[in-house]
Image 1 (cartoon, rainbow, N blue to C red):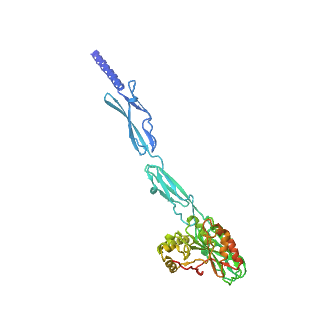
Image 2: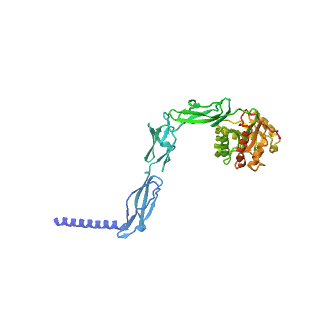
Image 3: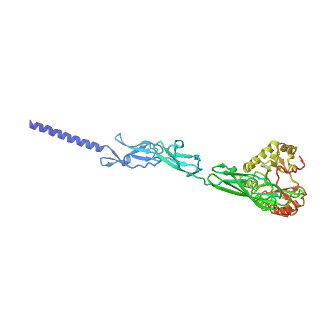
Length: 467
């Protein structure tokens, strides 16, 4: 009996041994795929680089028979599969690698304006703007959270992947700017002995307090009963005790001439960068005011119109385009053109000019392509409140005069013992007038003439209308 049991156990052992052999044999006969590194994590927009794999059967290398497929898109968050397949005896054997694409980059916040931001004392900071951009979610500006503190603002945002970003704008409460005082009529003024000084006006603006004109104080040594040069000092202090000071020079001339010999220097077709600045320098040195009938020469020359006004000259209107065919095609076309330059001058000086000179003068004949237009316009401008001026002394500087001497002689030979409105030009390159103007001024002063600018009270000089 014992021997029989031992035989059975022996048979079972043999069977198990054979079974193990076949299991081991089977496992080594079918292909096996082994992956390097296992599963992988990538950041957005990274490039997937295959870590490697190996396939074998028994002792045979079958790596070159592996087919690899994947659906990886590193531009989108997600989990993707890399499937490795090998075919053997009509069977497919596979291995899978999982690739996770994550967004691990925080968004950004860009602050517009200044940082630190300077804010006037006792004022509230006005948000200058910000922008938040995420590499995956795009524009997250509307998701930004603002937390206001006493001396800073904290801007924070979190993207849909949980990445967080914050930035701080510091706020400094201080007044670093002085007020600005602007003198109307320029910083030079002249009057005849015994006349009453008429303050042209001034304005004081502060970056924190706004208009503080009512806080301006003036001091002066002016004596209008004594010939000489004087000064009026304008001073203002803002709420931060910052002070601004500016002065106006006042020249008291001798007795006003009783003969009425007045010269009005007028300049058309400017301003220009080559002539107008030097012309203004000469007028300032000679303490003479003039009248500029300006054109719309572009914003780059606006500073010259501003300078003309601030130095006490009259800024009048000549037109916007100076295109005869356009401006004299109709009444509407004329005033449309005029309004462009009028609005521009008003925006620069703060005053609406109502003194004009027709391009070509009121006596021009080039407008005859539209019969009677000048007869209509000369009446219409008056009806609308404009004062228009022609001239009674021509310098010839835009035509027959070719030298400074010719311009000078054309002017002085035609001066009369009344109002002399001289036509000249400060268009670009007109050096003959620039080189003649000081000599003309000196001649006038030496021969009993006074120089004035045209105002709304000046007696108008008109030509005979020829159309």
